[in-house]
Length: 147
Image (cartoon, rainbow, N blue to C red; front, side, top):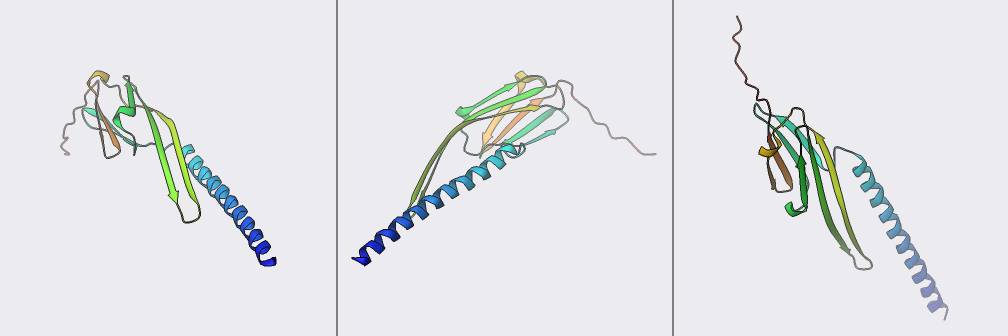
């Protein structure tokens, strides 16, 4: 009799401990996600560089499909909107987690020079969006001889 009561108490204690652990893990995950989301340069990552004739913007957007992307471009700014839906599963021997997240990422990038929006070309490959936009005023470079 004592043995059965002891097992029931242990089982209840173990269930409480697992619930507390699951809540703690979820809180830690939320804190990590919040710290990443608040860091402007990480989600989505970007680089902007110029060539003589164009401005090239690269955005890291893993898991986003091209049909879930909207790009709007003016002479001075590129606006990106991406919708996503992610599902995560963790299956263990005692406990399993299932998490589904949906949302929208919006980003506006001010371009360093005026561009021709109608001639922009965008390509999504391996989670990297590359947008190449011709400059309104092209820059020619000349070699200068040093005397």
